[in-house]
Length: 100
Image (cartoon, rainbow, N blue to C red; front, side, top):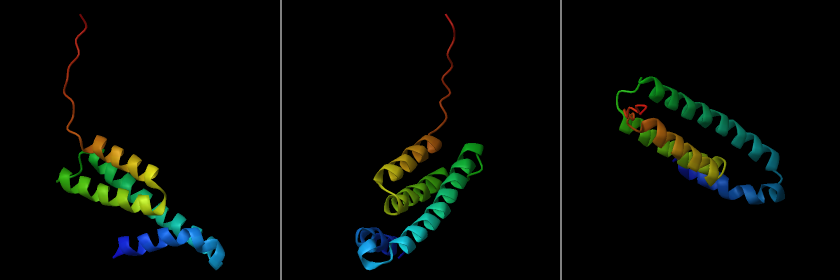
């Protein structure tokens, strides 16, 4: 339901200035961005500290958050969240490099 409303808000942005609600649209999208950004940072922080019981579920939540970011900001910002999620959810690389 939230994604449906965000999709509508995303599509309306182009005609917001003609409808006289551009400032309100921008204000709402900025507030939503602030909330989603905090959520993403919190989940990533929990992943980095090992505070997550089920990493695949955290990764799935981050992917949904990336879709939401794509509707609030743009696809470039969404892709950044996806890359950060993939990096945070990747198993640790235990490769040991020895000097020759």
